[in-house]
Length: 258
Image (cartoon, rainbow, N blue to C red; front, side, top):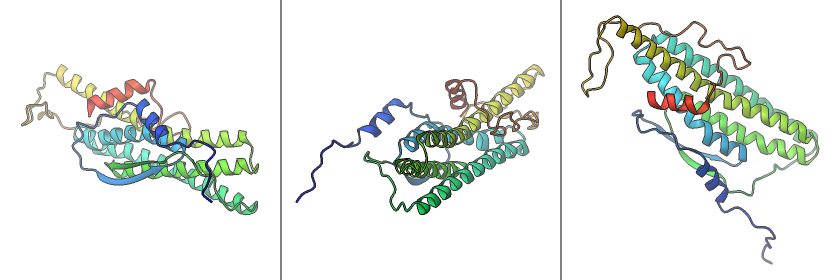
C-alpha cells in the first residue's frame, strides 16, 4: 500500500521567499580567490542567519585583512583579527555546550530521534574568502544543528517553550553579533583611513597614482598606526564586537570601501 500524504509540503518555495527578501551582497570588487565549500541549512534560523550575515562577515573581514592592511599598521590589523577570532571561539564553545547538553537530556529521557524539517533544505556552494569566513560558516552550521535539538526537547516536554525561546534567541544573538561587530570594526578602520587622508591633505602631501590610474598609497608618508587604543574594547558582553547604529549605513560604507 502506497504512503498517503494528507498535507501539502514545501517544494522549495520557502527558500525562494527567503532569498527574494534579502539584498544581494556586492562582491564585484573583491579580487581574492575563494575556496568553494558546500553548505546546507535545514532550520528556519540557520537559513536566515546564513543569508543575512555570512556575506556581511566575509566582506568586513576582507576589508580588515586585505584592504586595511595596505594602509594601516599591521599590528593594529592583527589585533582586530584576533578579537573577531576570539569571539568566534567563545560562541563555538557555547554551541558545543548546547549540543552536549541536549544530547545528555536525550539520553536521560530515553529520546532516540530528533525532530526533522518538512521544508526543503537550503543547499548552497559557498565561496569562502578567509579562515574567518570558514570559521563563521562552521558556526552557522552549529546553530543550524542546535535548533531541532531544542525543538525535540520541547516536544517531549523536557524543557518549556519559554526556555526554548530564550536559548534560541541567545544563540542567534551571539552569532549575529559577530558579523555586526566585524562590520563595525571594518567601518571604524575605514573612517580612520579617511581621517589619515584628510590630515595628509592638510599637510600638503600628494598621492602617487597606481598603474591603473587609481589613487595609491602616499609615497612621502609611512603607513602609521591609525586605530584608537580601545578599538577592540567594547562596553557590552561581546567584548568589542559592537553593533553599529545603522546596519544599512554600515553595510554601504564597507561596500564602498571594498
